[in-house]
Image (cartoon, rainbow, N blue to C red; front, side, top):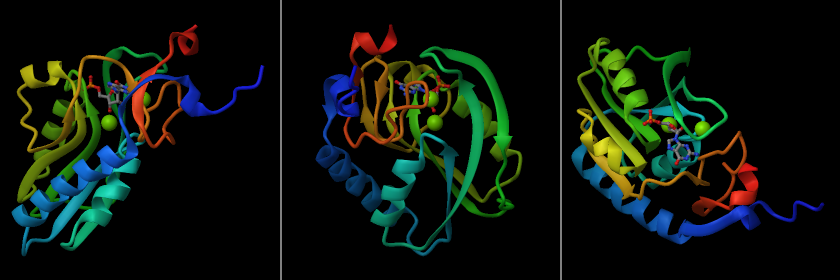
Length: 183
Ligand code: 5GP
Ligand code: MG
Ligand code: MG
């Protein structure tokens, strides 16, 4: 059967590309204000944060640098494994730097709390978190997130960098998958 178009696999659109852009620009304005006159290092968490990093960084007016980490948390399914591993470390020494971690989504916060304690041990001047999406469970976690794009319901979403089994990252909208995709 013809797979038609990736967008056809969404049952419900939570955010249109326009809504994502509008919210991201508001968050960027906050970051511009908070980091005015400082040298900012954005740390993107691969692969999900690629889209938000690209769009956020280009919405900023202040100077910034970018670096990337890859950590494993989820497998190919939709449940957090609780296993966190560094697959690719930073190229930058972050000691004494102002670091803003850029995330796609926080679900349990397991991945992030591991990452933050790891980065904190490298003694950055400051360490904050920006995430495009946050699920309810994350708010029970001790990790403090300074910038949040959207608080979303506890559903598995795809698009705007978020995948299901490696696919759907290139959707510009964010939504939930149709049941036929999982079966
Ligand atoms: P956590 O450790 O916070 O439970 O999970 C964080 C990671 O799980 C995210 O970076 C993302 O890769 C994945 N994840 C969590 N919720 C979702 C979701 O709704 N959709 C997708 N595609 N990935 C998710
Ligand atoms: Mg992520
Ligand atoms: Mg994933």
